Amino acid sequence: MERDIRDLFSKDDFVHTEIPKNHREDFIEKLGKHQPEKNKKRKYKTLKIVASFLLMMTCAYFYKNTIPSPEKSSLEIKMESIEKDYLISIDKEWNRFMEVAKDSILIKKYEVKLKESNTDYQKITKQFKEFPNNINVLQSLIDNLQRRLQLVKDIQEHINELNQKNISNETIYI
Image (cartoon, rainbow, N blue to C red; front, top):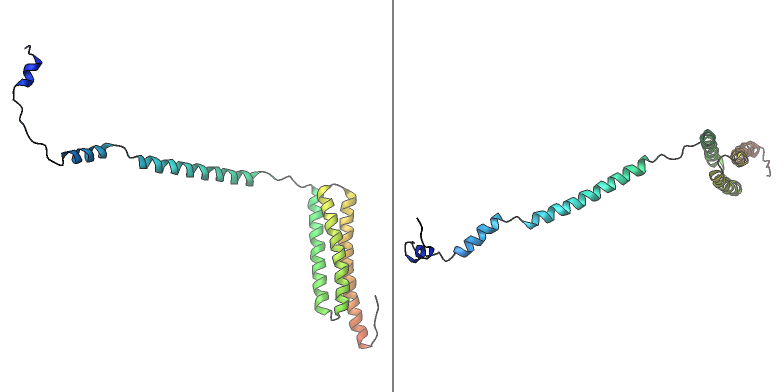
């Protein structure tokens, strides 16, 4: 069955059909359907970048919130509770004073004294944060709170005396 390849194509055994005019466009369209879309890859790449960013942000958030803060000593915890009690008492007494007081000059004098004490208190608090185990700073802080509370109580007593003495037209000077 040996044949010469040249003889094979020399005969007109082939059926000649004409190619339709839109054959080229149909071929390109069918070829395009089988090609992978580059757009999908781009979308997935963007999605991967966004997911990575969100994962990093989530990890950073949980890392930041799970870092243990330095533990407070028992002295600091006790000091905070004492400080809170004193500040509540001072505010309560001051509010009582403001309800009863009618003399604006007297109110101004006591406000100035309280502001001075508060300024000192802020300075001592900064020192306490720097040196939390220093007993002298701690004692100064407690003394300041006690003085402020005593000042407010003295104000209250003074108002009570003024109210009682006003009936008899006497005045008390500070």
